Amino acid sequence: MVDVTPKEPTHRRALARCRVTMLPETTAKVANNAINKGDVLGTARIAGIQAAKRTPDLIPMCHPLLVGAVHVNFTIGDDHVEIEAQVETVDRTGVEMEALTACAVAALTIYDMCKSSDRSMTIGQLALWEKTGGSSGTWRRAALTDGIEP
Image (cartoon, rainbow, N blue to C red; front, side, top):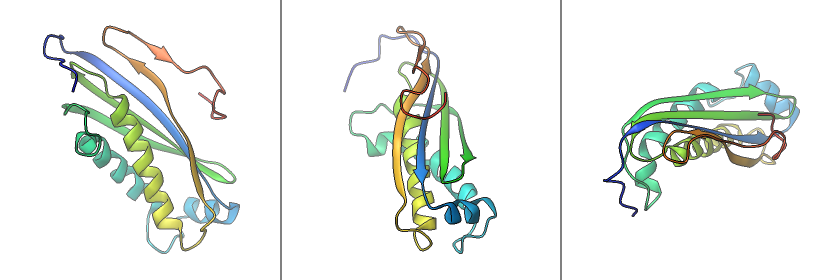
């Protein structure tokens, strides 16, 4: 584990995105809240928030942080649900892993809730899109690098 003790706490933010691709009929069911298991996006949002807070329990060398805010949002397309997770803290290390974990677990939750309707779903394009704070400052992914709009 990297020693972050000498670092000063600063405001840090990370933004990650991923996509669950599915049949258009499944996307319509998600949009209309017609999946038998219940509210897919509401459940996925809660799962993503919980995952961000539990990231150090899942990733061995990840520092436990005081997560100040987690926002998980969704955009529904014709044949996909795009997930965006933003995590913020004031701490000695960044929240990139927390944002990526929130996205991944939200996507897995969507898959779990929709699998009886569509076993052909795929989860992909998980990527960090932006991070701010710390000694390295701001970093942003170039637009359309992964096929997801910034």
